Image (cartoon, rainbow, N blue to C red; front, top):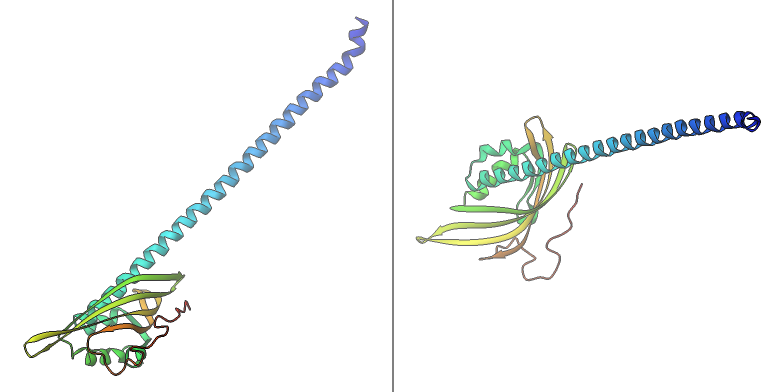
Length: 212
């Protein structure tokens, strides 16, 4: 009895210390769990934002490819009025490397109509789009394979060429529009026109793509 009376204060203190330790430990665990939950929520939110951004970028790239498909159709079908839905006003277009001119929209449309009037038919096939999107601006390089037909002496004469376009785009209230376009020819099959000085010469025909 005397021993119990002597140890009682220490026993009580020990039990109190254990209870405090358990309470403190539970609070610490709860705090850790709360932090983990918050970190998980932030991570999930970041993943959702990344996924949404990827979807938006993917949609922009598809829209840009569709825009250039409309350009190809307008030129091949000689529907020049449709180019107003492709180019932004004042867009810079450079066809010098293809033997053409450098001008801005809409003036370049008159030149295209004149040049393409000499062909009975033509088709532009666009592929291999490499497109960078940054907000309301975008830049793309893509390949073009073109077949052009002239009717001579009751038969079709076909010439083909392959090359690329470098294009810049701007997002408008009406959707994406071309703000800059330049082209280059890499090869030619058929009668070679005089404006291709690189014919038969070694060298870099692809050139460097500017992402600006």
